[in-house]
Image (tube, rainbow, N blue to C red; front, top):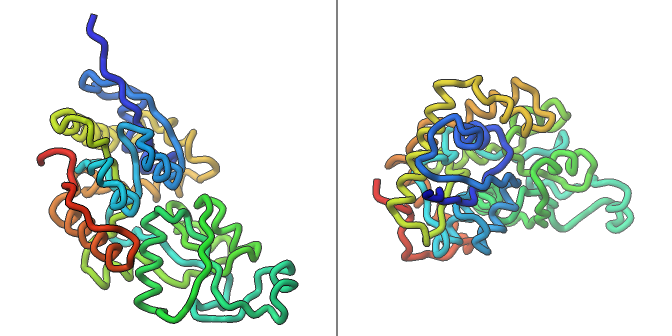
Amino acid sequence: MKTEKRYDLAYSSCPNDTFIFKGIAKKLIHTRGMNFNIVLEDVETLNQNAAREAYDITKLSFAALGNLLDKYALLRTGAALGIGCGPLVISLAHRTLDDKEKNRGQDNKENCPGGIQEKQVVAVPGLGTTAYHLFSFYMKDKFPTVETTIIPMPFERIMPAVMEGKADFGVIIHEGRFVYQNMGLEMQADLGQWWEDKTSLPIPLGCIAVKRSIDPARALEIQTLIRESIDHGFSHPTLGDEYIRCHAQEMSEEVTQQHINLYVNEFSKDIGDKGTTAVTTFFEYAARAGLMEKTAYPLFACPQ
């Protein structure tokens, strides 16, 4: 009896990923003779694990992929790119990114008499994330003389850190853009809008990549399977939705649907020429900023 090939497949618990992969995870579609050991982690953990090639197929920030092209190659399906979906910089009220006045709680006041600090403290969802890279590009463009102290943390802790005075600003992703105002926070910058104004391109946020050791023909099968899972999700939006809800933590049904609507789009089905240009342009920005090295490795895992 022929044994089906098993692959480690890793992605985040965010609704856009669970929507994309529910067809595969819940066996709602035929998996083309492949079995999958599914792992769910936050995106920065996925980025870090990819550095040691932990998974055959994995969700990555595009920023992480750019530094791992010797190990992983991009699939044309499953990506998160788009317009109006980028990270936001948020803070408590009446702050600006070039404001030197600090008010981060009693502990900081004791360490810094008068509440004056040399650097802004900014919480980001990981140093390997596209969000952090976009923030770096933005600051060099808009506030080149402002110095920042960067604190990486899980994305769900960023808004509480700002509210509790542990950080001056936070770079928020995922559902944070839908709920930050309810938490009394203000937006200081829309990093996606800045990127769109600078490049006229969609924002390359996250992607699905496969190990370079996987044969291109098999990579094409995996790519096609993900496209079929997305198509199935759009054709049967309520089928398997308990899989999305059980991983959405305390997210409301409305916010969950907003999340899916924003991050799962035509670029998720096929990155296309415009999406490819967005990715290569992002890599060029990162290389100029010293955040990424140029590489001769091909971007994609398989032919179109």
